[in-house]
Image (cartoon, rainbow, N blue to C red; front, side):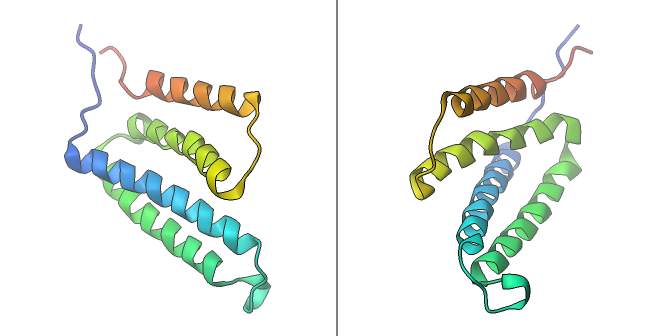
Length: 121
């Protein structure tokens, strides 16, 4: 029996990297926007509007990836955003790092690695 591997071409890989980058950018702008008082309804401000635009763009690109691959096979790749956001929160927001966060991130990475390659057919 042969293993049914997930085959990602350059466009797929670039799209997933772009989605992960947009997730991180959206989180950064949302965090900055959440800390500022807004002039609009419900305290919205430019950073929050920017984060919504980034998340919308991410959704469009992600839907293109989902057209080409089963969601159960590519969705675990989005788990890579958790360790990425942890690193960004340390760098940009000086948030504390704990052993639990490190171990949790490692478990997330291990889980994604186990899920993505595929099942035996």
